[in-house]
Image 1 (cartoon, one colour):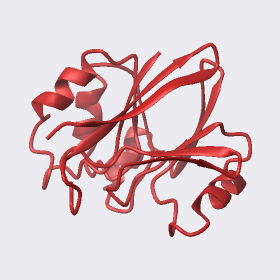
Image 2 (cartoon, rainbow, N blue to C red; image 1 turned 120 degrees about the vertical axis):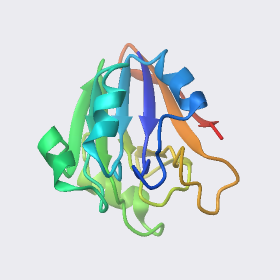
Image 3 (tube, rainbow, N blue to C red; image 1 turned 30 degrees about the vertical axis):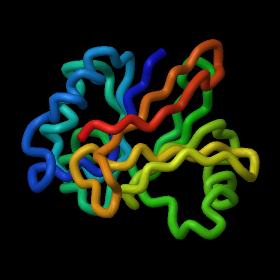
Image 4 (cartoon, rainbow, N blue to C red; image 1 turned 90 degrees about the vertical axis):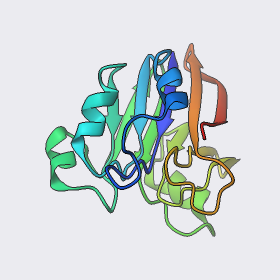
Length: 163
């Protein structure tokens, strides 16, 4: 299973259409995860044309994103890999410990909010932030994440520059 992971697309202020490099990744997606701050549901509807989408609410999301079906947190079983999702994982200090406590059975926790790409394993959990493809803030490039899952294992997790 190939999973494209997005966060913090911030439509329509930053996402004014799907960036070409993001579109190229979506063409190969089996599943799409969005870790919040999509802002408007039309982006989720666009993404769903490529693959099934699971999203969580971010602090900038309009009520229409909740109406679309995005909860504040989500737990998924992706071919046996247990994945937790949340937008804001809190301060950097103690983050893995907090995420282990919040999602005790998760193998992987996907989050966003900071726009800082991250892939860290500690406290018995791996945490993954894809960054933002459209609002890089202090990062050198816009990014998204790619996960390859097979037989209940995360075979690879990559942060890919898209701008």
